[in-house]
Length: 370
Image (cartoon, rainbow, N blue to C red; front, side, top):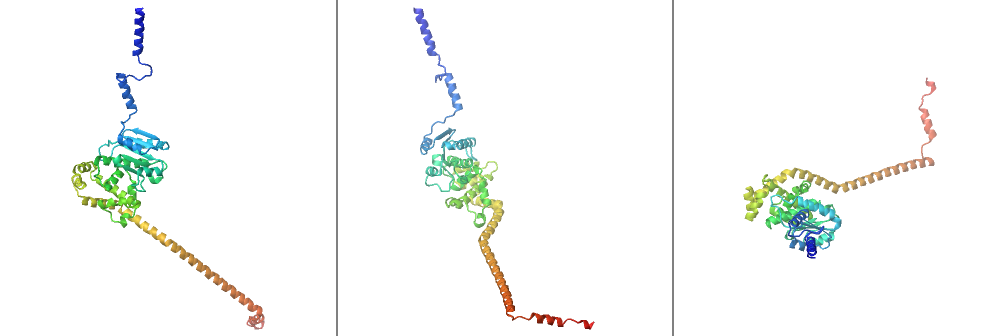
């Protein structure tokens, strides 16, 4: 009997100690730790960030959320493909010229329509804006797949906005607006900014602004802002070209340490702000001045063609009408003359045909003269 009890106890102990099939290993075991490491490598789950969660709470109408790396993407299901492509691009290009690799968590919200885009952006953003970055909240709001071509290439737009956040994370409020926008355009490789200068007559009709004057152009409407974006791109691009090896790295380091762009410019490149103003003006005019002149001349000719075209058309129409009236008058006069001659003949007022025939015959030589 005692042997039976011992056997039963042994079997029960083995059953209790053996793990069930398909059950997770105990958390304290080596197998459990290995399983957790493997799972974390397969599907990395970043720790919840309170600021990100608060930002997500502001866009509750989205039905899709993606968390990868330091990015959280929220969108509607219809923009799922776009969201995945944007997220993959952000992860693969998560470094920016001259700056340390950013670490802050970022929320990217894709608005499904114009109404919600305006609601998420807020009333302070310009009406012509295609996307916006809010550095204080580490949040980006973009337009979804239904947006028109004016919203730009989503991959380039996201890169531009992420550059704003990276610059703010590294430099705080030090960069002015012209540098902020110019740097984001350079980081996003927005070559189309230069095409704005190439096809614009602004270099002919306007004096190129100083860096201080360039700041005001971003608040003067869509047309002026477009011109200012292009010039800001040129200014930052010329800054980076001053150091072919280091680019903007030394400038950022000195700027952060000194807290002054003027002093950082002297230490990094050995020139004053006034000297740099002249330098980038000269380089811009050298590169685009002749083309802008041709473009401007073409624009002037086109303007005069538009202005004078209707006048020339009206004059030609008037001349044709006048010639037609003259032809009709001549035809009427000819017709009246013929009718008058015929009427005179019918009344007998005209010359006698027989007399005319005799007269003609009297002048002929006769046969007697032969």
